[in-house]
Length: 527
Image (tube, rainbow, N blue to C red; front, side, top):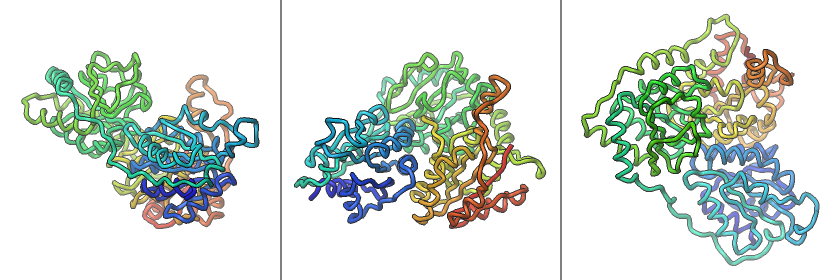
């Protein structure tokens, strides 16, 4: 078979169902190999959108999403979404076409050193310069991308290699290599810290969700009534409906979660890395810190754990829970109750019916009309901060936030990927700035037959940047925008568009949209 046929057979062996990308002439063989396979190629409107789709697929399923581009500008357009997946620990495999090997030693049309370009934003990447290495390279790309901690990998396929014959065949997939159980002596050091603590607190990070350790985390919290604070990417690891949840880390040092961390005398981080939230804002004080993760903590003066448990997160939590149940260690279980009560009151408070719309005021309506397992995909901007901190989340992987790279433009393509990946309702929440960056993917969603709700918060501004400028200088510059009529814009794609003008109308529109089967856009002007 041709190398391109082998590559696609390898994708089938890996269980790939969709490949998102933009076609190019250098990938002609690969495109026709996809046509004749069980893998669905989804042509998108911009490579960045395709990479975001693969990124969100990986976040939601734990299986590597796949994106595809041609050489040169196609590959550079792919970079942002690949980098987003890499920093958010989302498994992704990027495939780029390249010109023939005979012209890569010299300056030639659209030729860039794409492997070198992708090196800083991938766990591993290589050029497929021989058809007989395709099977090994594809297997390695998926194995490395999906191994804890996951991330992005990249394969470059030159057009002449794609058409060459090979007798090799796909390698069998194997059960993923897992991290081992915690070492007994390290666990004893953690137990010693628990014995000396009165106010232990747990911080749930991305790894608590990503490794499927949410149930073990909930059991540990319940065993001794331990409070849990989540990072933006750890939302849902412990249900915010649970009395142990103090919801999400604040963006500063003056919120209830920060107050709880300041009062704690033992902080156990679970699946956390410092790209998620700066620990310099936590006010750790003299609290002992335990780091539970699959990899050692980054070296940072604001985060120097007393004990690092480098092991399978779920198995570590199980061991601690078993010990907590068996021993007579007791903690103060009332110290965080008032903080929990204040948080719940803050996030559930709805504005007066006649008040102007705000993101914070709309979020309680979101929560009411969405089921516990519905998925909210947030874009990046001031609305993301509100969603991260004020949107109660009840199940793992039901609030998707771009955080490591924090890239605008992810919501619309991310909503498409989520709609293909889950059986529940999907809402893509975005600001007007991020929306128009990848709004063209609405056409892709309609063509593929998706049905999800896009909510656009409109303030004619890059609002988060304005806020920061005004905090620093008292004024803002370079942040103002204008927008088209977004309802008409949506309708031009065949999407139902709405612009509610009252609180009652907003609730009715969102309830119908989220519970419906078709594509809907809801424009909400906010102050």
